[in-house]
Length: 199
Image (cartoon, rainbow, N blue to C red; front, side, top):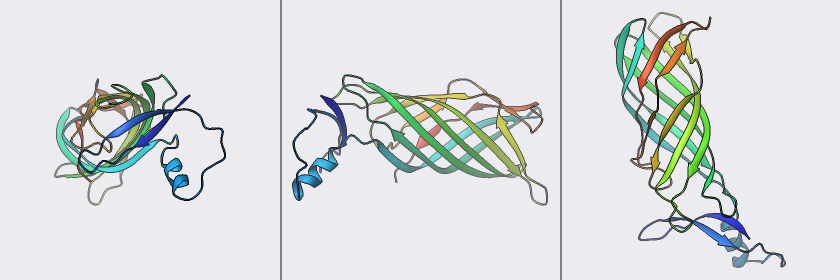
């Protein structure tokens, strides 16, 4: 037997189910039956959705800046193996803001981690844990851009109650150090509450 990770779109609820089905050895069905079989194939859940990161606390060279960023994120949840309620996830993030002191700010990040499901029949809420690295590019009018990087992978955690996520929150589990091109620590991010918005 194997797990087939399917998205069941119900008119009333729109539930996402982890369905268990025996591995088929018979000839592949044709016509409508083939389409149904394809829909039940063991494929990952994938989505791109808008996000807001409100109340980011970033300290640069001794000055604290509070930022509100918006943009988009993507999330892929791999199909789990039979009997396992934990599987791999991967995500990307691009968000921007305009700050009167810093200028234009672009945050780009990607990460990998795990999703832990509630059960096979009712997988959500699912716990997400991501280990991510990223860059912060700052450009003030008339000046060259400055790009800072995370010194080490940062940990993001939270829960999603549906897929694609809507209204769900991920946040930093500990402060993220930012380093310049020479590897010198020049700042930290202490708050980074990321909220998934309706598409």
